[in-house]
Length: 307
Image 1: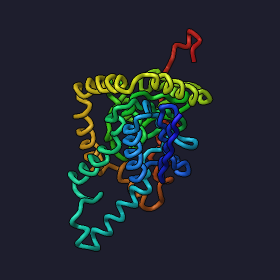
Image 2: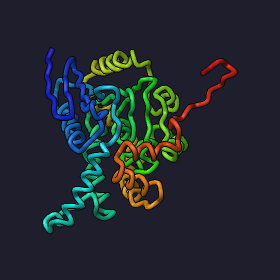
Image 3: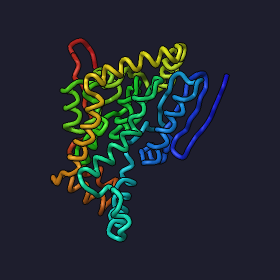
Image 4: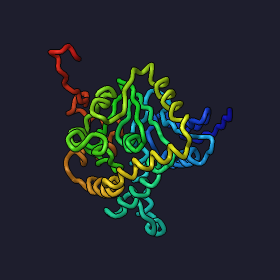
């Protein structure tokens, strides 16, 4: 058995038995994504795709959550830094920044898409294993994976839709159709792993104590197939998605997200103010308070004894 190990600041990378395991590894930050993590995830995916011994890739998260989305603290800090640099030096004004025009924002999002959409483009199957929270920017990554398996009690959604923007890597429509995509994005509500499996947002949901075993067994079964055959299957299905507009939608959803960022509405304005004056925790509390626990619950036929 060949075993190869490489880890970086934000990513843990392991290879064993034809399976590459890429782990988001900032547990102290609930694996919130900064620019370094996105870049290193992109590089790790390419490395796994290049390795002849790898046939399937598992993507998971260290600690109690898969990923809490974008690291908003670093995002807003970078925005403030850009503002100060832009005002202080003529040299900084030569370069695009996070405080520029609508087109600058589109450019930034497209640059990020070129890295964060890599799961769709690698030739090898990618299984996302979801536990704890998988919210906001985390869903941009997960929904571009080939298969998603979640713990029944996982929490999946895009709460940032309430005040921060729209998913720039929009794959919600392709997983759940127009009505569920709108239901989840219009409110920013989350859905449990169990209910996500019911509506097709994830392939399957299993009890948390079985999540590792179920994911590993699926990866083992996939790894029994020759890589060329796996690549053919993946690329045929992905071409079908592209023919139905998924690639074009990625570009347009990035532009729509940039347009959403221009909102001067009260909720977005208040979020910016809270971030600046009171910090991230307070801003998120104010944003999410009107929505209670923020969970969608699918009604079932109680007359048949189902819960």
